[in-house]
Length: 157
Image 1 (spheres, rainbow, N blue to C red):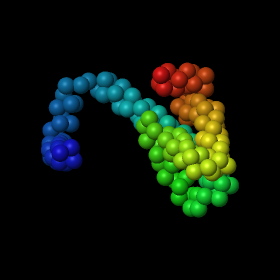
Image 2 (cartoon, one colour):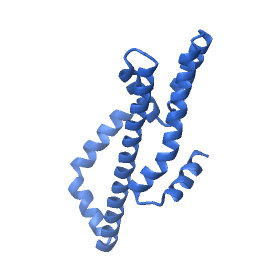
Image 3 (cartoon, rainbow, N blue to C red):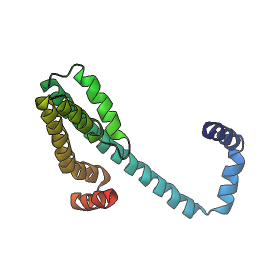
Image 4 (cartoon, rainbow, N blue to C red):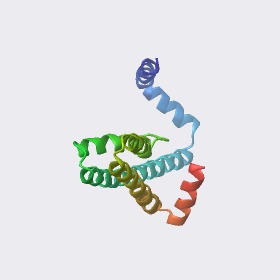
């Protein structure tokens, strides 16, 4: 339903785009239009900066995961790391969504070394992200790292 509505709306808007543009120019002053476009450009820059920071954090997470899984002698470690990083990119979910249940299963199977190793990987990723996320996001958004840390904490709460 959503895809069909989106396609229909896109077609209707593109068919009437010249009329829509004329109507907007008539209703909105050029000064307001300029300010709105500047605001949209700033929002676009902020979103790109945030995306760059998140991609760097995902890369770091992938490297830590891959190294940890290789040390634990888990076959296809880079592939497993890629899946876990993609899971980490989804809202609310994180690396713990995969690593902690996996660790519990290993513990129940009496594979204590691997279980402790998986928890260690999770702790290493959590610590590194906690330290680097405010710095990277703040740097790419042009914010003070302390202000970014406060905003991230407030967002998590």
